[in-house]
Image 1 (cartoon, rainbow, N blue to C red):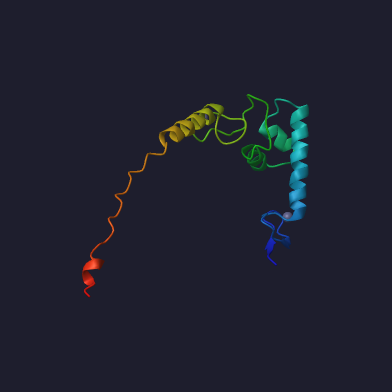
Image 2 (tube, rainbow, N blue to C red):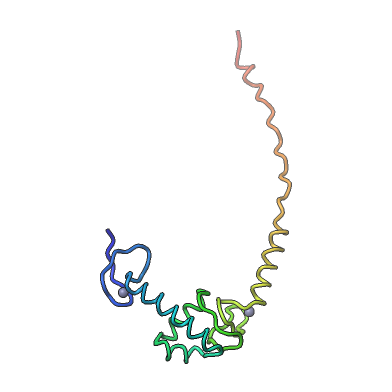
Length: 136
Ligand SMILES: [Zn+2]
Ligand SMILES: [Zn+2]
């Protein structure tokens, strides 16, 4: 059995691929629901306001945004920028433009890598020297 310390509260728990103990996972889920509800009721709320009102760290809110589990109203400064072009974004890690460009790039690279016809290998001529070694 793999026992680890929760990175959040330090309690020991059985490790199942999560850095947090079941209590903290549940608490985070509750926090996320609370934050989502707050944003729903207060459209246009900033990350700082949400953090203050819901008692969730800005860091955690940004993490949710990056994981695309949380979405702010368009135009709200989330403090997140596109990793490609630096434009402010509301969720994820790159903006819509870069996403579209990436998709396009992917498409053209697929077209470029069309399978080339393999040059046919010269068929080996069967070795006939064997016959010479036979003297009877
Ligand atoms: Zn914990
Ligand atoms: Zn971008």
